[in-house]
Image 1 (cartoon, helix red, strand yellow):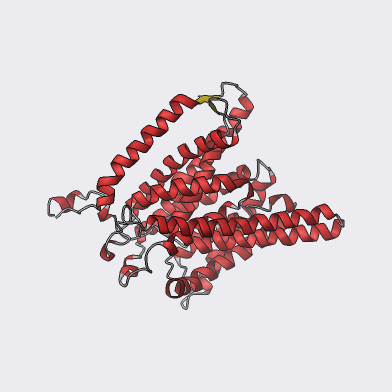
Image 2 (cartoon, helix red, strand yellow; image 1 turned 90 degrees about the horizontal axis):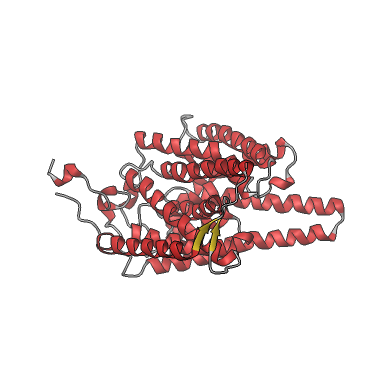
Length: 401
């Protein structure tokens, strides 16, 4: 017997998604134009940046969350859907809110890479609710999160904002994970291999992302690589150390090897040699493994939050580590220089980090409550949590094989 699709997906998604896409096309038709200026050197630079960030967003994040036993298709395809929609929406937000709007929006070489970086915020957040939400809810979440992050992006830490936005959305959804659903939250051997492929894509291209994130600061590439290298070694070693029989947990590798790249994502200008980045990569790997071992029980039972893909200890905690380290280094610099302006910069950055955390939690909680309304709440039954069957056609089921 074939799978009976959720009403919200079968009834709302095609009509609403196509209507939204037509509306976007009309806006692009009437208001958007290309910048025809040509600079071969600049064109090649942004072509490389665009290529690296797109591979990271589409392949890296898509495969990273595909390790679940019965939810591979949804993980990869929903990621692509959210990315494609989020980039279009972010381009328009950039044109209407940041450019001086004089009847038209100009798309430059920097527009698509910047829009892709903005759209990566919901790609991070969705890891907290993947398998427990339908595609209609994910579309709403993408539009809301890209908008909120875009408005506050000049004062936001993308990793902290996105991680705690996703956790707050999960907490705002109705009720804790039902009994029996956790049995579906399993990883398969072949699926874990695909997830490791996503991890490798992210690991390779994370230096390019931090390079673009920090306004093309060349030292970002070097420090990000050193931090990633140390966090990878730390993750594999500590994972074996924490197992009674000395075996390595593949789920730890999926997440903790990336922690170093997250941690150095905001303090590149303050690091002028490799060893601080390496120390930060070591600390980030330790915190990520520790979070993976200890936090799921606390979150599930005490707070009623089920972090599907470990967003908290992959992005949230390493992001906070990087932010706190940045504050410490800025305080050290201010004390050494005896400059009041440096002290003022510390207060500004502390406000930025606090704002990222607060905005992520508040806007995520409101989004979770919005996604809980009856129109888009059609959540799969417990036996279909973390399962592709409610969203995809399986020919062998349709013919009774």
